[in-house]
Structures are given as structure tokens and as C-alpha cells.
Length: 304
Image (tube, rainbow, N blue to C red):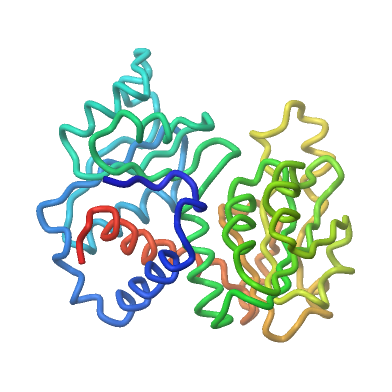
């Protein structure tokens, strides 16, 4: 039995295999419509979520399976003080696989060590969000046809952005990747991501505060929101939240085939006037998340 807590647990060949399955699901949805008949996924969301939770649920329904779970900690026994370990043991009695989101880093790992069924980390604090990275990779594959020789701009909150950390881990395994890290000083990429992932893999990178200046060289621009809930004080948040707003003017010098991505939800960091630009890929990215979650559920349940 295998869980997925961190994107690094998947080898490059496993990533390729998941992507190929997802592409096949897109082409042949009928072929997969009963693959999980009689199976149940438990979505244990101790933190609010729209896309991730509903796309896991949609993924299981489209595979012919069923869904149980909760969407906030208050509606679970966690509100009575039940531990994550005990919750995982109990849910293992009712379901075949768990998707868990939790505000505490490491909670899905604890769940996986105590569950007798596979656990998927659907986001743990500022730490990891591997299935968002799978959605990101499928989007890049469908738009660019490759993962090597790409210049990837990551913009916004690079300090607490778990989606950014996971994507850097995944892309660092491919040849010819260059990262352009665009953020305010206060929200720079953590030192451990730079040393343990980017530098360790010999990846070229630059850090800058200037989004417009970086734009012309980018193949992919990955925008993130400056997250209010990650700040210790309101003043810092208010001062920084509008630093990086993508609008049509900032895109004037961008490549014609730039791929603009965002893990969503957005607040105001991408102007709605960008939505109709053919380079905007973020809604498609959300749909790609459902296909990759379908592929992952099949893999972890050992269904061909």
C-alpha cells in the first residue's frame, strides 16, 4: 500500500505514467467510467477548499466510485480533540483511499503512518501540495509538450506558497530548466528550497522584485496570491498584497506562447481583463487537476 505525501516520492517515470493515464482519460472518458465501482474516497478537509476537494470528489464520481467526508474541522471529531492518527485509523474502516488537507505541516504524513489505506496529501499548511503540482505538470505538458528547456517565472508569495515549493521540486529533475523567482523581499523563496532543491540540482535561477522586467524571457509565468492567512500582522499584508498584479500592460512584452498559470483562488493578482488572453491557462489548469487526481487514485488503488 502506498500513499502520496510529497511530489518527490514520484519518480520521473511515474510522473510520465500518470500524465499518460490522464491524457488517455481525456481522450477516452468512457473507458474509465466504472474503474472504481464499489470504491470510496474519504475527503478529510480540515481547512477550506473549493477546487481541490470538489475535484477529488468529481474525479472519484467520474471513475464510478463514491465519496464520503467533511469539508471543515468543526464538522469532524477533531473539534472534540480527536488526533489525526485516530481519525486515519477510523476512516480506514470505512473507505478505500483518503484525500486529506490540513493546516498543520506533516498531518497527512501522520495520517499515512496510521491508516491502513492510501492517503493523498491535499495540502498541508505552507509545506506541500503534490496533486496541485500534478495539475501544473499536465498543464505544462499540454501547452508546451515538454518539461525541459523552459524558463519558469514564479511570482508572488514564494515563502509560504506550498504550490511553488512542490512545483520547483518536480521541475528541478528536468534538463535545461531556469527559474526566475519574482517576489517582495519579505516573501522570497525559503533558503532550504534554494539550497536543497535548486542549487543541489544545479538549476540556473535568478531572484528579482521586478515582474515587468522579467517578463520577456518567460515561457511560463506561475502567479500566486499573497496569502493573508500566512501573515503575522495586517500591516505587512496590506503593504504587500498589491505588489504583483498581472494586467494586459504587463503582458505587452511577454512571449506570444507564454503560459500563464495560477493554482487559484485568485484575489486580485491577475486582473480579470487577462482572462480572455489566449495565454491564460489557469482555468484549464483547474480542470487538469481533476484528470490527474483520477490517474493518481487509479495508481494508488492499483487499478490498471
